[in-house]
Image (cartoon, rainbow, N blue to C red; front, top):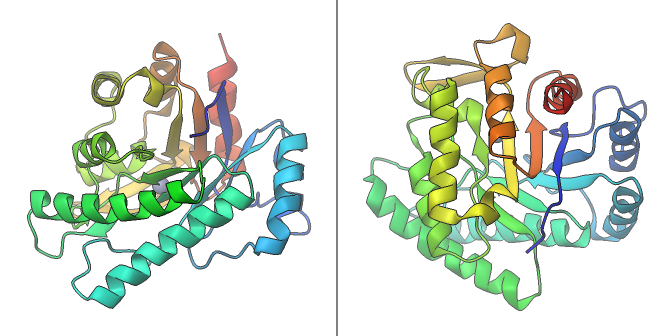
Length: 279
Ligand SMILES: [Zn+2]
């Protein structure tokens, strides 16, 4: 799988400040801002065509920008209907294949809904589905990390422990840690230095230093209620303790990438990067 040498920062999608909104221009804009990562937003559809992927890869490489992707929202590895399950697997495979063609580092997605099932039941189903997916990708020589993301609502499978456990059981899988989702999911917890440390300590103890050296992290401000996530906010408009969060990233000397999912995308990516670079 792909290995990182430092911590990269970038927006979740083509920066808003890109004049003509193409993937290539987005990469150029990211580089011009001094950022060095960009997430391809495949959330509605895997919009990048195979034919266009090699040029994107070349441009990202020459600009020293790493690419990640966010897979489609319409995925549920706990779907009851076989055709929905097959379609979910296919959506993950399609995104991962396009990532490979575009030279991307990592691809994330929201794995499943509980649909009233117990956590361990869903855990088993998702693990079985991920094993099938990863076996196919391995056969194809695909080295993109495939990452279920920590989710923001109690109805969605994907708390930290579930995803770390899944990662211990399926090769090529690591969690995408969305610190804002963890905060919203638990109704306002997971927002202190101690809790940020506990999250990363759990990852290191279960998955090893390798996981901390190859992170894929999402951050934004977030509005939440008793049911969890409502919507994303810019960091300064939210209660997210992002300065403490960056301090903890420094303590753990993280490598990989930080993707800003704030409405202002590239601005919060820059804010976090500046805090990271400050001694
Ligand atoms: Zn996220």
